[in-house]
Image (tube, rainbow, N blue to C red; front, side, top):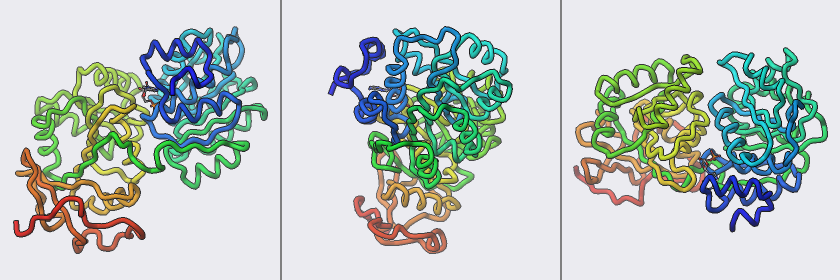
Length: 427
Ligand code: AMP
């Protein structure tokens, strides 16, 4: 299928051609015709599927050739983080480059005044984080009385971040007659509840099977002692032939320390997390995008929405607290059909978390140890040598005592064993 068949106006097709997209992604194929027809939408799509364009293109088409000329916004997009707001706004500008429409992003961590000035000049598409939008509404520097299209992007994450009350306040200020597009990586009960109150006869679309990771991402887990994680990461960065690598740490402090330690090892690294100013975060992200630093160490919240072309590797230095975060994290690589690799460094303390992730994914991850970095307490019995000093470990039907025997089991379909990799006994 080509973009020409989606029913988009010529100005947007020209912008798409300029961006070099050859054909619409599955989410675009499904979402664009429905949104163009004016219907509400409940869409399950992860970052990397082309979801931003899936709502930006029809929204821009709807606003069409009527520019703002000082009027309040006609489209409102809510996003969980500043980074995502900035990126979504950039996408609207990209796809709308041949339309006389103004897009602005408003988010916290930077001064209100430049945003107020832009809002006063007139904005057609307003992309906002909920908290900062509330600030503008309270100061009466933003008006929502003309909004025709509301987009909630990464709704699950907004709910996780506690934005539900703010979202409700914002929705209460919108005209009743409008189009609603809700995008979410996962459909949690909270998202379903929000969708039920917000959407009218929505079409429901689901591109990748829910909670599954992008097929283009190879996922591997390396069992290693906690204290050996950093040396192992340095080893992999030095010998693995990896390109730009995004490393996830659980805490702000941990992210900062790891980035310092990598720098001391001579690996160019930067950290982004919630304690950094917006300027520092933007600078670190730019350096990473331009390849001036090779490793970006981030916390989950700070990394939300990061979209870096050619990101080859995502490393879970610490496993995420929730299995859903794992799916979000690894969605940073393998984007729009490119291949990527997601590596999880799993300490014995984190094996239960690994099980939970595997439970969500509905499959076990390829697990291995690296020669010289084997854990003191092997995760499993039996192993298989891998090239380049990588040893595969697996447990046909064995659930190692004391580690996660108490955890909930998959209950239907999932096997503990890694039957797809033959065991070699007696090592
Ligand atoms: P998203 O899922 O919105 O975060 O988009 C992920 C990446 O896919 C972005 O870098 C987009 O520029 C890119 N992209 C979006 N649509 C297409 C397409 N139809 N063909 C190729 N790349 C695309």
